[in-house]
Length: 109
Image (cartoon, rainbow, N blue to C red; front, side, top):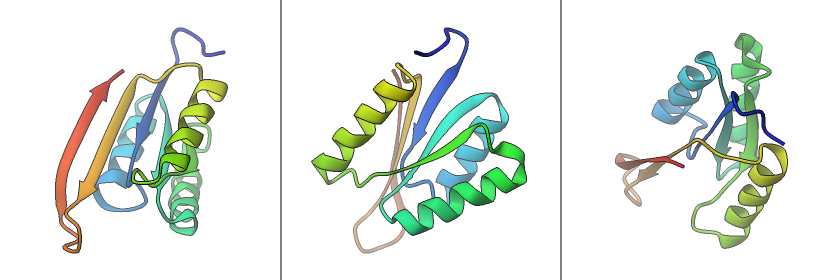
């Protein structure tokens, strides 16, 4: 179960760009961060880069496609089992077909 002083965050779409940098910043500031991405290979590569830069204890990868209920349920189970709580959820979404950041939702859980 989670220690009361530990803080946990999930960042969606975090294998590059703003999402990746958000993971880096949160991890550098004491959060354990779940880096998520639709593409497992890209997500694992991004998490490995962060681990190589000294954040190995703070970053974990979990595959997530927010449009796929099975992966959402899998992530929820992972968080519940591994951490017992979640402090912050950051959701980055792109406008379909443009590659441009469409919206950012930040939830303090």
